[in-house]
Each structure stands twice: as structure tokens, then as C-alpha cells.
Amino acid sequence: MRNHFNTCVLLGGYLYGNDQKHAQVHRPPERCRRWRQRGMGKGGLIAVDGHLLVLTERGTLVLSRANPEQYSVLSYASVMRGTCWTQPCSPTA
Image 1: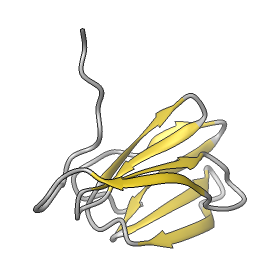
Image 2 (image 1 turned 180 degrees about the horizontal axis):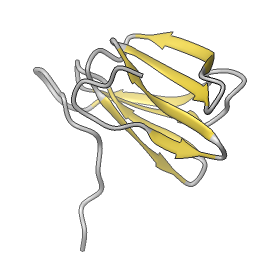
Image 3 (image 1 turned 180 degrees about the vertical axis):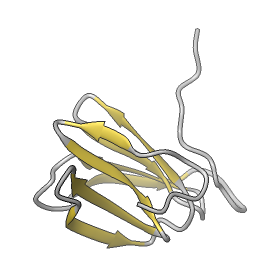
Image 4 (image 1 turned 90 degrees about the horizontal axis):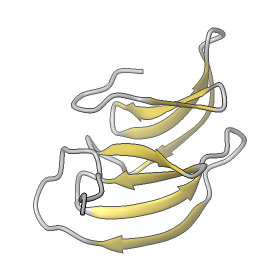
């Protein structure tokens, strides 16, 4: 993985992250890519309850299953304008 601004997340033995503008998942230590999805830009992602919360470079927030076999989007919404190079986070109360 060639991350730009954000680190990968390790979930269930698989490494999910952003590699040169694509969301990807790898299985360490074999380093074999399981899937790759375009459209992330230099955005970031976090793991939440077995899901991935992705904030794309263009400000789209995407909720997908953390599934090493396929990329499956559950929901998405445009939440920000401009360039977003940060990982999503939740505010604390």
C-alpha cells in the first residue's frame, strides 16, 4: 500500500487502505490484493463495527462492508466540498 495521508486499518486479518487513489484490501503477509475500487482519491478510511467508513477526496462519505471478497457499498452521501485528505472521525460528547 502506498498511502498518501492516512494509514491502513487491519481488520479480520486483512489490510484495508488507500493505494494511489484506490481503496484496496490485501492479506498480509502474502501481499496479494483481494480487490481494488476506484474513486477514493487521496481520502481516508476507518473501521467501524465490521464496516468501512470512507471519506473520498471529493467529500463523499461511503459506508461499505469490510469484506475481503468484494467491495459493496451500503450507503453514501456528499458531506463536504473541496478537497478532503483526512480520515473520517466521530465527534466526542
